[in-house]
Image (cartoon, rainbow, N blue to C red):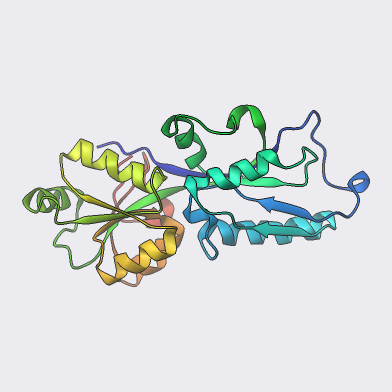
Length: 243
């Protein structure tokens, strides 16, 4: 079974006629980071929020200018993306983007921006898989066992996502289609509340970000069934891959 879902962290900025470092002639105006990402990535304390703050601190020290982190959740990252697109094209409003931006281009009939036209890439930060994880109360330790369990309990299992159209939502819908199972979608406004309910048993399945889940998995509070990569992932040694 192939589930090619990987969250790619990128930094983008409003399209410029010319892209230059924010040093010297740009003065000392604070640089605002209206980050666009999946809805989870735009919540405080979510993994991309932490990554963005760490990167902002490093850039502040390197460039000698303040970086202000702005969380703008909602609409599967479109609110944050539109804020960056509408910002003056002076390089002072970089964006933090995830695979949700690629999904949104096909998910929404009309947007107030064209991501490929209006946003210019700066750098790839990292690439991480999602992990197919369940609450330990579920009687399944492998993907085939979970499929059998879900088929025996149609519409009795809930899966969490970090919002409609998010990578975690699309991953689960693809899994449903390929495995032939009927699961109930429960969207959340970000990864932390989705993980909280997965830990509490209110939902049973989540294609979550590996960075936010690995601690709970290692502590035995969640059970990883697979990671969404083509090959084994170093951070989850011993868990199969389904990409």
